[in-house]
Structures are given as C-alpha cells and as structure tokens.
Amino acid sequence: MRHLIIVAVLSTCSVLSSFGQTNDTIKTDTGLKYFLTKKGTGSKVKPGWTAIQHYTLYLLNGTKIESSLDSNTPFSFQYPSKGVIKGMNEAISLMNVGDKGTFIMPPDLAYGDNNSDPSIPPNSTLIFEIEFLDVREKTLSMELYAALFDQPITAESAPKINEALDLFEKLKTTNFNDLYVGESDINSLGYRLLKKFPLASIEIFKINTQLFPKSANVYDSLGEAYVSIGDKENAISNFEKSLQLNPKNTNAIVQLGKLKN
Image (cartoon, rainbow, N blue to C red; front, side, top):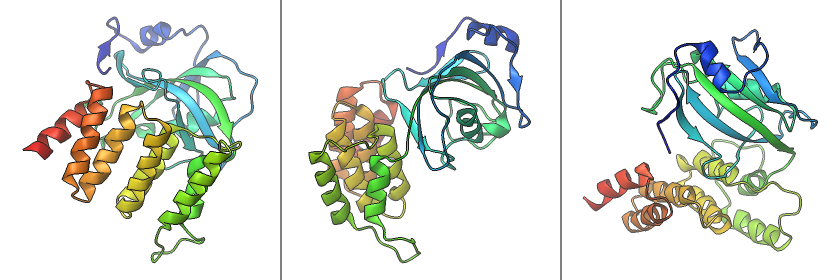
C-alpha cells in the first residue's frame, strides 16, 4: 500500500494539476496552501468536537505514503488536537462537512525534521487530500475515557477499568445511541493510555477488536500493548491474526520476527 509512485512530477504546479486543481491556491498566514475540489454544505468543526475524514498523504514528488481509503477506515480526532500535525488542525478548521480539498503543508506544519517514519524524509513538504465527512459532539472513546478517570485527573489518578467495561456493555445494548464509534478514534484512546496504563490500554484495544474484527490494525495495536507488558504469547497471537488479515503488514512481520527469535 506504500510507495505507489504517480507519474514523475517536476514542479509544484504540475503536482497540483494532477490533484484536480482548477483555481488558484489560497495561502494562509502560516504558509499552508490549499484549494477545494468539492464544496459541501455542512457545518464547521467546533472546539472539543470530533472531526471525521478520509485522507490520502503524498510527498511533494507525487509518492503516495498512505490513505485511509485503502482500508475504508475514516480517520478522526478531537479538534484541536496535539496528537496530529499542525497542518491537519488548520486544514480541518478551514473546511465544512462535505468539502474535499488538497492541502500543501510545509515542514513546520508537518513533521519537520523530527519524524520516525522512514517513508517521510526530514523536512518534507506534504500534500494531503482530505474529504471532511462528519462532525460529532460525542464519541465512544470520550465516554470510555470519562468512565476511566474521575475529574479532574491528577498524577495519582488510576483508570477504573471495570467501570469503563461495564459502560461499554451498557452502551452496546443501545447500539451506542448517537455516539460516533470509529476504529481510529478508539485506537487513539488505547495509545493515549499505553505508556502509563498498559493494562487499561489492552482493554480498550480489545474493545476495538470486538467492534472491528476484520481490521488488521486493531490486532496489531493489541499486539503492541501485549509487548509492552512482556506478554509474548498474546503478542504473537495478535500479530499473527493481524498478518492473516493483512499479509502486507510490515510491522506485524517485524514484531513476529523479534518475538519468535
């Protein structure tokens, strides 16, 4: 799914034309450049609400890095978020639900020179194609997080795993009412907990495997959580399940190689 090369591109202008540019690009004060290829009639995202979108990421030379469309799994985040690059926060703030556009993000709005992904060179300008699908005030991950921790959260706070699991079962009987239930949304909560509360993160990742049992990514994430607590047997089991669903999952291949050796 990675490193699909589009026809060689020699300039920014020719890159943009390949993305359907018909009008001049707009440049914001931060240096973000963009143009819309489709206008929607929906609302804008409000602070604290969750933005749901499909995206495809390219390098400036036309190399495709990744796309949520490949797995038909929309990406979501609570706006604004420190968990996404600055350019993504700004891009979604400029859009209405239903909009589709191309956004050119200079390095200081993207990953700069500090990026662990080898497919994105340091100081890369990135091109995102974004389709803004929906906004939701509340999500399942928000409700689970509220059940896990009493407010306000302090250094001594500990997750109430049983309360969160009980809430999940209760919400499941009502088909989650009007909550947004998204794979990436729940996965983000799991990783948010992983470093400090690995056992809680495992339960969140398990919830994702219940909701999205055909997704290779949810088992991959659960495998990583088991690695973090030294549970080799369950880590291997989940990485193997992930690999069955997606034989091209390089992370699962690497992790299994380490665990089995």
